Length: 275
Image (cartoon, rainbow, N blue to C red; front, side, top):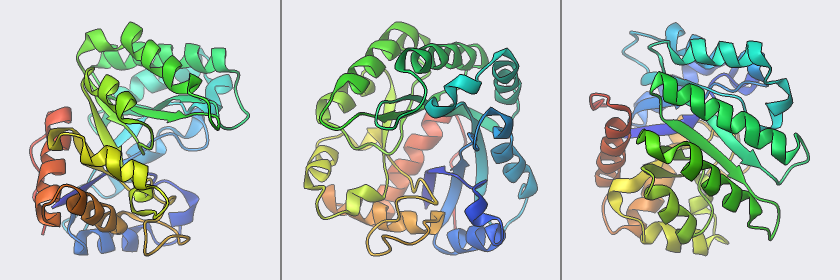
């Protein structure tokens, strides 16, 4: 039993074979996938929900849920119409989370103050709809400002909701993880956990309580070892789960059960049993 807590199933890289991708995930023991609804901008936020509806009720694919959100780079497109569309999507039963949202200081894009304003607006919408949030945070090289700003905004605008969320594709410090966990966040690891040069990330993962852990692919990006460089897909989350299991001294089945329980608890969902 495994849940891929973050996959971009609406990516054009799956346009020719999404059903086969989902079949392979089911065969690999993936019982559920959270499809991330950011698209290439606010006009495409609905596409993850549409994927969920397309495969609803099928027994040969994992259970699917969707999110919706406006990515930091698209903050300049977040007008009132887009924010109203987000609010409407978060009211849909298939859409269980708001995200991925947050801050990105690594790439040149929307100004940091604009990213912050749109991040706060989305937190307000998510709080109104009682949806946890999925956090994207990517700092500039050798600069902690992005994380400092993110944690500050979460404390001011989110912690009091007690809705929690997920730090997606986590690759930062133990201190940042602990500060987020104090606000009810789970910590999700993607394929980087398997990369040989990221021993420090594995050391962080080893110090986190099992009840705070999730695994993800961030597919189609960040394929884990031994598939690095290929198009990623949800079936490959087994490799990240295996790495996390070794780090915590348990079996992959046990880490699958732990992370699935954590996901279900966060979103108030019944546990999805796989093959």
